[in-house]
Length: 111
Image (cartoon, rainbow, N blue to C red; front, side, top):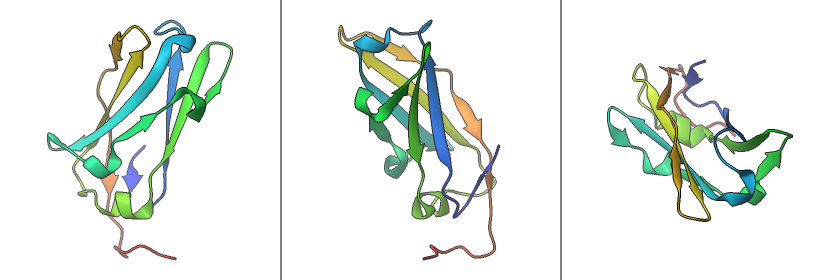
């Protein structure tokens, strides 16, 4: 699903117990980039207390702001990667996944 500039989409990251033991997670890093350039404003870190625990999944949520999505370049995919750091300094890294970025006619923050 594409991200529309100026919208406030929620990026939901779901981790499985098959990948990492929940009780060993110290931080989850979510990094976004466009055209090989990391977007500092969109980088975020989750702590375990920022999550919803399921039976076999842990869900982290990050809502992008209007200003953050307006700063994206339209028609260039926004790519994202997840890094999980554990208590024994093991690092689990996801594959890179992408979102399309669509333009809007009113390119300003609305209030």
